[in-house]
Amino acid sequence: MKLQNTTTGWGRWAERLGAAGVTHMRRVPTRSPKPLRPKLLAGSRMLLCLYIALPLDLAAQDIAAKVFTHADTLRGSNTPQRSWWDATFYDLHVKVNPADSSISGYNSITYRVIKPAREMQIDLQLPLVVDSIVQDGLELSARRDGNALFVTMIAPQKAGTKKTISVYYHGKPTVAVRPPWDGGFVWAIDSLSRKWIVTANEGLGASAWWPNKDYLADEPDSQRVAITVPDSLYDASNGRLRSTTPNSDGSVTYEWFVSNPINNYDVAVNAGHYEHFSDVYQGEKGKLTLDFFPLDYHVDTARKQFQQVKPMLQCFESWFGPYPWYEDGYKLVETPHLGMEHQSAVAYGNHYKNGYLGRDRSATGNGLKWDFIIIHESAHEWWGNSITMKDQADMWIHESFATYAEGLYTECQQGKKAGAEYTIGQRKIIRNDRPIIGAYGVNDEGSGDMYDKGANMLLTVRQLVDDDSRWRGILRGLNKTFWHQTVTTRQIEDYISRQSGLNLGKVFDQYLRTTKIPTLEYKVEGQKLSYRWSNVVRGFAMPVKVTTATDRLGWVRPAERWKSVAVKLNRPEDFRVDENVYVNARDILKPVADSTTARKAQ
Ligand SMILES: [Zn+2]
Image 1 (cartoon, protein in one colour):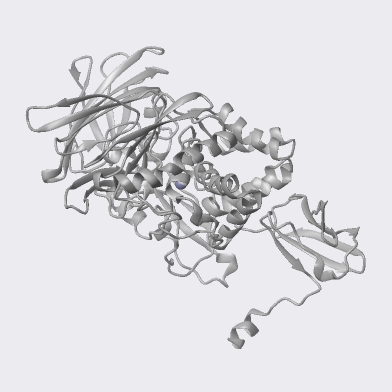
Image 2: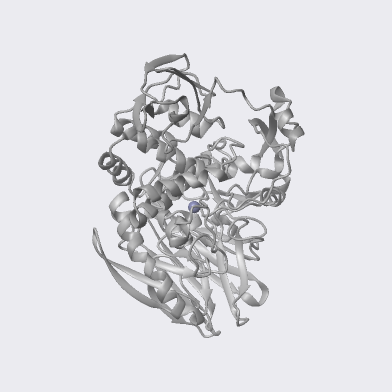
């Protein structure tokens, strides 16, 4: 999804999780003692407000307590009550009742038994109420532990067999406060005051509105999404529409079917006064259907703006390989919130403007030549939806690549230099406040730097690979190797290292696991350049291109100790570091600006 700042989401979420209590605490480095400033994009809605502010000069104490709860562990880890079963099919039926902002329905969960067990965890967030849980015609009992249900199994659960369990429920689901960042159900109206009801629940979790195993590492192989809404509304959900059934009570049921694995947070209700138009894209795997669902009064505008979809698909297929969901089609669905990567039914709320709500996050102007939400959210079909993190801590796998994809799209459209400029322009938004990777097992997201810093890390790695066809092969190879799978950071890191022939372990450690920007310290004395890395993880020895002769870049291989090389520079000021690489450079012969003096001068 796309980031934006919110300082309150996690607090509210933690409050909702409520009484389960604190079971462990972890210390996490942080640098910002200031109140969080509004930031163009953020993404980390979950944990910001629990940081304890500390003065910056207390370096040794520059840490903050980050508190995780028992509920976080139930939500974010592969508990014993989850690990014995593998979801294979979700048969979801939900009736949406706008009159009182309630929903009711059931999910029949088909699963494969991995090993016998007596208790099953199914997640359904409060305040939703379970009516009954049924297996083999028998009603099962369950105990609630916050947002998790622990169901006592009666029938034998024999390893290797498939079983189905149905959870019937109703209630008023969490209302999204600031979708898509503080997610939940969105009970909106369009500009003609007609109902417009959607869901957005990344991070918060799909269990905010339907019962499932709310754990990223387990996706069903396919899913039905049958949504019942008042017959004035049309529901555009994921996959393909199989049937439309009017009911006697003035409602209508839209039965959608997703014939591929799907992240549960991608499953969406989009019920509104939509107009529909369609097109076909001739892609790498043949004909891909394109279906567009703008609000009826936006159809003419949408016909123009959505023309960006075909060049986007062409660019991304060339860099990443085939679009991952030919069977389910590609859809764009207008929503009252900014956007979300809902699989095969991308949520679009960018007001038919280019840029990010009309602005360019890179401040280069290059980002105003395309529609941010179409490009960024669609990139998630490859990075996030086809290749999915197993743990929320590894969300960079979704966002770093999707943000880097913005630069690649700029490259497709405006040339390689413009693409790099776009990504480099995003450096101004990097905060280096916390590491990009979060805490594992507790549904914790790392820093919002997973977007812009992550993209710049990938641009940096591309320089190291130093061969565009190999780089393309790596991006396509990742998609081929991890096609429709859930993965760990380690798998992605190892793949890139292996395929590039470079040991990138320290590079990933530096950018993903610390907040430190590598600094190339150097001095030019006559025709001699001396250089070394500082502010780096131990053993960091990333090669980098620098000016070794006036107007010519050559590789040097700095380490933490000083090295030197003969150069041909007319003046020491001619020295520079390849701007595509996200590092700092410092001429140690120049006096360091004194921050005290600088402040006085202001
Ligand atoms: Zn995103």
